[in-house]
Image (cartoon, rainbow, N blue to C red; front, side):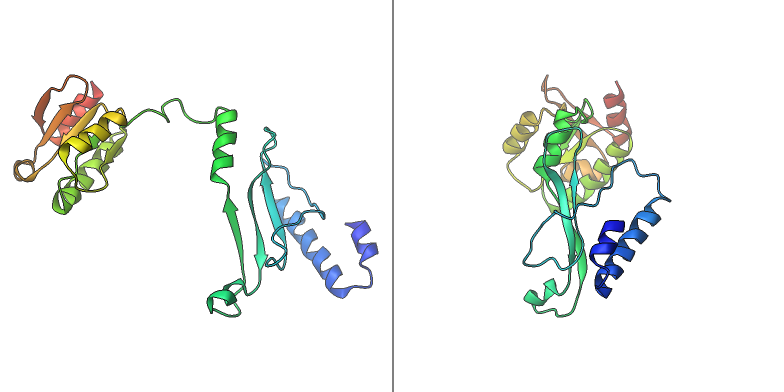
Amino acid sequence: MAKLKTILASSEIGLKGIAELELVFETLKNFELKTLLELDLTLARGLNYYTGAIFEVKALDTPMGSICGGGRYDDLTGIFGLKDVSGVGVSFGADRIFDVMETLNLFPPDAASGPKVLFINFGEKEQMHCLQLLAAVRKAGFKAEIYPEAAKTGKQLGYADSRKAEFAALVGENEMKENKITLKNMLSGEQQSVSLEEMIAVFKG
């Protein structure tokens, strides 16, 4: 910082920029940062639209490059017809973050396991009903999914099998009337009619 002050001694805007940087570093002293913060004057990003500070995030425990990056841009929204709106943005490199987490074994052991149950989707009305059941199953601590759209039951059961779901939950019009769930064991093929509480009890073993 002292060297920059000497170099930019004749620039009012340059000295103001240094003062702002000093404020940033001074402010960050009040936070318990667990990461290394470094000022790098050689960093360059998107020279055609960034107009202020830029930043990048690296994972120091792996040889990966930057995993996040962004900066300040004035009037970038002007190209979309919204003039004079400034902002700061950041983008996350999902693939790189995934690679870093995989390299450092940061995924929980059950991250790759399939859901405990997959709810079969019979239509909009049934889907809305199943979403409530799905929320209750998740609240009980079990992984649950619902097929994203109404489709042939065989196709959905095939998807449940490919996702390695332990159970498939079928809730049609009759089940909704009786407040029941047809629970299918994907391994044995056995089916039983259960209530929500009974289904969760089955999951608990």
